[in-house]
Length: 112
Image 1: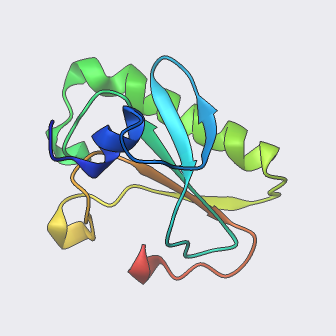
Image 2 (image 1 turned 90 degrees about the horizontal axis):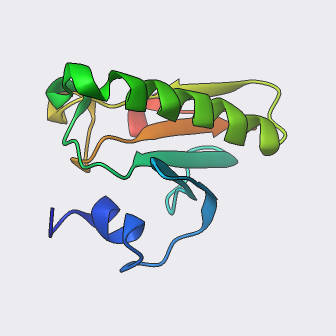
């Protein structure tokens, strides 16, 4: 997708602070954190929303959750929140699936 900010980050067109990358996902620090640790897990495959995912995306979404656990532990978190915002009504602002990893203190989920 040519105008997707997360696709541009994944392709290296927009700089980011990567904390992890493999063949399926990129993990970056959120530029507007809602917690002391706020990492986004982005699939390299563009999927607009969890509501748009297909059966074939099931393993990719599971991989995102596993990588979320891994980066949370590597960040030293003892506990954390994982959050997918789904569609505009669910708080989704960027329409490229992404998993929020939040920890290290109070998290206001209304603002994620």
